[in-house]
Image 1 (spheres, rainbow, N blue to C red):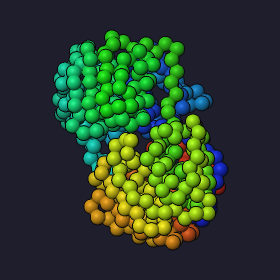
Image 2: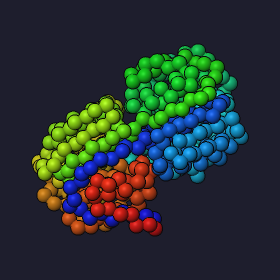
Image 3: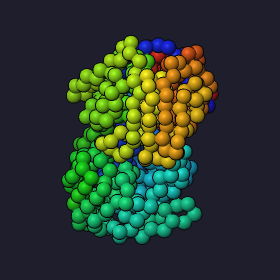
Image 4: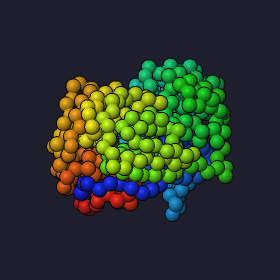
Length: 421
C-alpha cells in the first residue's frame, strides 16, 4: 500500500484552495435518492469515500455522470436495488445514510450494519428506534437492517444523544413522511445544515436549521429540475492546514473556506500564539518564527471543539512551549496516534480519556503507522517538524478524507512525497 515520506524542518508558506467537505458530500449524495429527477452537485472532493459512495449508488442501478470539474449528476430514476451490501459498508460507515432516504421514498431498504470502528463504537440504535417510531417495520438479522414501510408518519423524536449521521438519516426520512416531524437534540454541525439547505432547495420544508430542534413538514415529492448545489468547504481540512502552518512556524492563507464554521479551532490557534485574519471565504494564519504555546482542549459536539481536530492539536502540543491537556469526550478510543508520536520523541502521557502533552524541543523522524483518518493527518503534521525522515504507512486512511494532501503540502513548501505500493 502507498506510503508518505516527509522530511521535516521546512516553514510552510503560501496559499491553498480548500476542497468541498467530505462529511457534507456523503449525506447529500445519499439524499439524491429522494429525488425523481437528476440532481447536479458541485465542489465534490476527490476522495476514496466519495468513490465508495458512488460505487454504492451505482450498484443500486443509479446513473452517475461526472464532468472534468468533479460535478456529479445523479439520476435515481433508474434504481433497481434497495441494498447497501457489507463489502461496501465495511469500508465506510457513512453508507448507513442510505437507510433513511431508501425507506422514505421506496418503502424498502436492506442495509448492512456498519459494525465497530477503530476510534470507538458508533451504534445505529438511534437510527433504527426512531424509524420504528415513524412507522417502519425493521428487523436486524445476519448483520443486516431489513426495513419496510408504507409512507412514514411524522412524529416527535427526542434523540438520546447527539448523533450527526442519526440526525441526517432521520432528516432525510422525514422529508417525504406524512405530517410533521420534530427532531430534538439534533446535531448542529455545519454539514447537517448543508444537507438541510440542499433538501430545502429541492422543495423540502425544514425549519430550525443550525439549531438543535429541526422541524420537518413532510411533502409528497421533491423537485430537482434545473437544480445545482455546491457542497460547503471542508472545515476539518481547513483546520488541518492551519495547524500545519502553526506547527512549522509558517504563514498560510486558505481560500474557498468558511471561517464561521471554525470558531472553536481559530480561538485555540490564537491562544497558541497565531495571528488569525479572516474574510468571507478565506483565513490567513501567521505564526512566522514563533514556537506555538501549548493549549488545553476538550472535544464536544459542534459548536464546541471538534473531535476531528483533536489529533492535529495533539501533534502541535507535542512541540509547543509548555504543557497542554487534551480531553476526548466523543470517542472512547481516539488516542491511537499518541503511541506513534511517542516513537518520534513526543512526551505524551495518557490517563483514561486525557492526553497530557509536554512540549518537546525536537521530534525525530521515524517509521509510523496510521490507525484512522485524523490520526494519519496528525502523523503527517508531526513529520513536518521532525528532524530527518518520517515514513507514514497505511495512508489509505488519509485518502478517505484529504484531497491530495501531499500535493497541497508541497504547494506550501513541505518536503513530502508519496511512494506507490
